[in-house]
Length: 346
Image 1 (cartoon, rainbow, N blue to C red):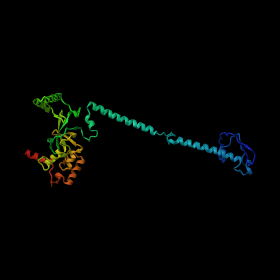
Image 2 (cartoon, helix red, strand yellow; image 1 turned 180 degrees about the vertical axis):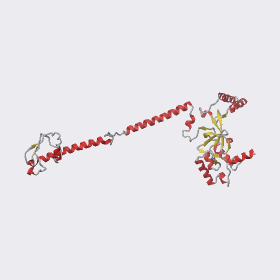
Image 3 (tube, rainbow, N blue to C red; image 1 turned 60 degrees about the vertical axis):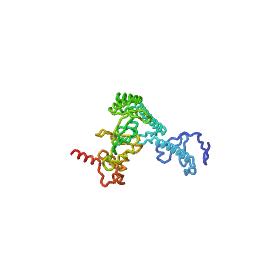
Image 4 (cartoon, one colour; image 1 turned 120 degrees about the vertical axis):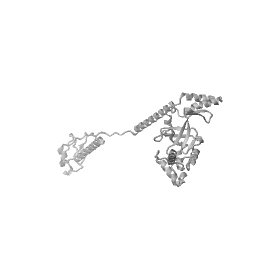
């Protein structure tokens, strides 16, 4: 290519080699950028500039601008490379690697599926062996609950007072929970056959054997015979008036109306000194203790249960003057029993 800049013709090479840096003296003198390749020397200064003024249109200055362009381009590339290498911060220029979101989601999904399969497999295995039925029945049981029972429909005569119920639990509904002696199993089978043969005397004899062992054979709604165990349940956290106390009869009738003919869910905390199961009782989704407290037919038995919700339900009944709270000075059942025991002991 030919360029005429008011002077001699200068021929540029078709392919320019990469310019090399000036020597330190040239840089210090402010000539700017890099020098031309050695095979194309440029005469210095005004001798080669038009009118001797160092015109920026001359070849000398055009080559200097060209060298500066190369220098600027190389400086930007080096600066970008340093910034890229130093992205790791002060940790020696290590590159920061980001985790792929797709990989993260895949790993998380795999872990969740594995945990779900593990839980379902164990539950199926345990229930098939029949040794942890009550664990699966109550996955979120309250703190302190030892086990859970499900009863047959409650008979009206099973309600002793406002805080005690007698219930029957079918043995077959709780596999692995009860330890039934072999003689009881044989007696239950023989009694069913005796009833089929209408040998009622023999059936009564076998029923006595079953009762003495703490069990009982009952007839279910379909006419079949089921082996059951009898329990007395003491409602935890409340104390209803005794039958001879004011509102004692009303408390018993209210509890009877609530549970009669219904199956109950019993959450057992332990036993009291009379051998009763101390438990929370659920009747078709109704918390029985809550029902009795809100009706004003029971006291919060704070000496044995400090649950705040029980105190709150009792205070609601007090504020509304429900049941026994309509009396000017209702007597506490535990104080009434203590006084009665003192009178008898004298």
